[in-house]
Amino acid sequence: MATPIERGSQYEEQHVHAVYEEIASHFSSTRYKPWPLVESFLTSLPAGAVGLDLGCGNGKYLTVNRDVFIVGSDRSPNLVRFAVRHEPHAAVVADVLDLPHPRRRFDFAISVAVVHHLSTPERRIEAIRAILDVLTLASGGAEGGRALIYVWALEQKGSRRGWDEGHEQDIMVPWITKGPKSSGQEEKTYQRYYHLYRKGELEEDVVKAGGKVLSSGYERDNWWAIATPEGLETVI
Amino acid sequence: MKLLTLNFLTCARKACKPLPTSFPLHPADATLATTETAFSPAFLRNILPRLDWPALKGLCDELGLPGVGDEAPGPEALFEDGELPESDEDIVGEIEAGKRPTKLAHDLHQLLVETVMLEGKLVCASCGHEYAVKEGIANFLLPSHLV
Ligand SMILES: [Zn+2]
Image 1 (cartoon, rainbow over the protein chains, first blue to last red):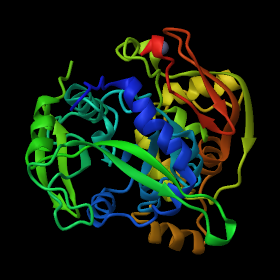
Image 2: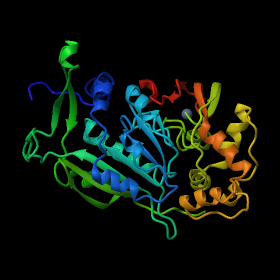
Image 3: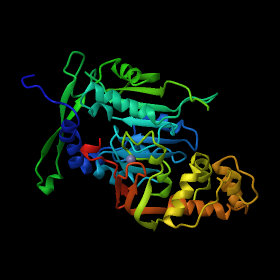
Image 4: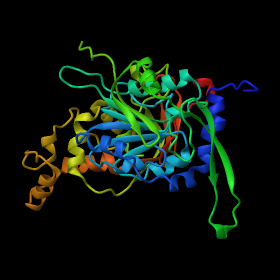
């Protein structure tokens, strides 16, 4: 690369957060179909489970299961305005690295298409640590809380974007907004930063963040992992 | 934001997280409203054991809402005959058979689900930081010098 890029929170403010805030309405109108694996994770939860949807966007996963209670959060206030409409759940504006939730209180968390927007390896691992931090620890016979984490894959040669092994992993991806033809509204292109995960990298990051991978795999151009925090509840 | 949500929120600052005073947050200048929401005894029964009861009681006191008792009620307190139906279908069946959710169940529904905070602030007792609530949405983004 010709000029070194200083990545971090300022960079993400410009190349991730500001973009989502701008495109919120158009983005939301294209995001309504839950991914099958996330849907089955949520429907498999016991009634009464309490969890978090970190990076909930417009709240499309808040429609899946009404027998659990989910507090969604997203960095974009414009997206949270959509997310708060889904009863019986809730949504707040928050950053995944500064979560406003008690530690070790939640049975589950999902984080879909969020961690890949953090622009350094340290910040991605810190995000996963923050996700694991809110989950309950295993105690007695009870299992610890579980997080489903989803990130975009480098290996997606079948997709229209065609990236594959060996390609640059830190990339800018365009989002094109256009109004209806009749509106005469001009097309506008926004660039969002992504880190494309290579095979095995998500599992490595989970372990570095102090977690244990319970299962993992590939679905529709994404890598996913279900993780739980290492360690046992100490009873005092 | 329904009041139930407050039972699962703390200060977002890393320095505050380990401190017990960072939970719960304390409402200030709060404008409350009531939104009519479908009554679900099953949801209440499920959520009840997950509540931090002292935090809920403290919230009621601070907001000047009719108090809840000192002790968290058990799920059996939600139904007139004290017996807890197993499933949602059973609950519907029992209601159709004339058995009624208790006044407590209705009160809790009103308090946790229907009472919402529209405007105001949520204050951390540990660091004093105030998080704004606007149009029912709480914002926990921190200014850069607090991150
Ligand atoms: Zn604080």
